[in-house]
Amino acid sequence: MLTSPATSESAFLRACHGLPVPHTPVWFMRQAGRSLPEYRAIRAGVGMLESCRRPELVTEITLQPVRRHGVDAAILFSDIVVPVAAAGVDLDIVAGTGPVVTEPVRTEKDLERLRPLVAGDVDFVAESVRLLTAELGGTPLIGFAGAPFTLASYLVEGGPSRSHVLTKALMHGDPELWHALCERLVQITGEFLRVQVAAGVSAVQLFDSWAGALSEADYRTFVLPHSQAVLSSLASAGVPRIHFGVGAGHLLPAMASAGVEVVGVDWRTPLDVAARLVGPDQAVQGNLDPCLLFAPWPVIEAEVRRVLAEGTSASGHVFNLGHGVMPDTDPEVLTRVVALAHELTA
Ligand code: 1CP
Image (cartoon, rainbow, N blue to C red; front, side, top):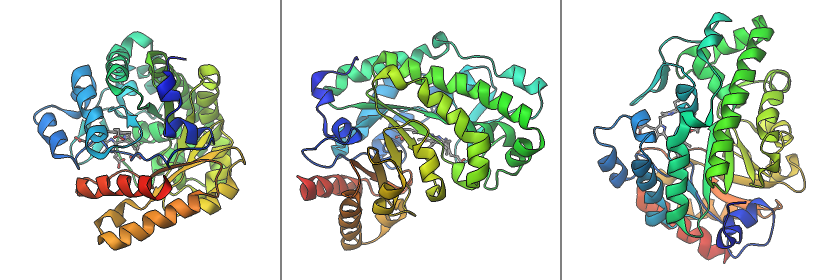
């Protein structure tokens, strides 16, 4: 809709739609962030949530990796908990830890603290997207949100959790409360994405980062209907939808069925295997292991070649890491990976 002709013709959007590309497009999850000295400099003394609320700062941080690495897409600098905070939940993003919720959501009464999100709650996001699309020219901007399960885990646990024990206990122990919580998150996440699309993002990614902790049966019963509700509310928006989880190889067919054009894959599942598990018309995104960026260059080069070769099995391939850039990554290695992937596929 708002996407310019140059953006529609970009390698990234063409790959999302399974169309022939001039080269395989590349972007990195967490490409904006602590691996960049210019990010650390501009963030000095500004809290994470506060920086997400300042459109000029968001614009500069989002553009930094585009300028430096020549990636094929920008991703809005924000965080998955931003809309939840805007909808009334008292939380903070603590350096070195992640999101911490002051009063976890565990009872029906607690749900009252999660009111519906209205567009006006996230004006700063719409403004950031407008500033960015004006600056980016033909480079697409990816908007994103956290999926209901991953957001629910932070709200129920009160912060990052490896086991998601309280979340799993709640979904099985009180399914009615679980579904009521997820329905509120569907509204918040859906509205957050619709605001970004209306302001001009060219694609959206729904991060269900921690869904891999679930069995397929639990995923299908307790999670998929809610992710589907978010994604179907964007069906008429005309932008490709990307869906990603970590350690979710066993869930790929289910996640692909949520209503998406692109399925994100972590490093555990080779892309040719993933391509067989998703629909014939769906593209894949991934999946270089972010840890391997710390190996010697010949190892990285071989891995980039392998990922690109395996990606040719899919109807479209967007090159990415299997999860986010780790903070200590040498940014020059990232720049070299972009150049190599372009050179090998041009
Ligand atoms: O001060 C800092 O720099 C804090 C680090 C940081 C950053 C740079 C956090 C805290 N969030 C972000 C930005 C962010 N978060 C982006 C920016 C855009 C980009 O990719 O370049 C994105 C897409 C996110 C999304 C996000 N936040 C996810 C989904 C993606 C993923 O990594 O799986 C999740 C799970 C979060 C929660 C979160 N926020 C921050 C941290 C450290 C965490 C993870 C904590 C945990 O382990 O549970």
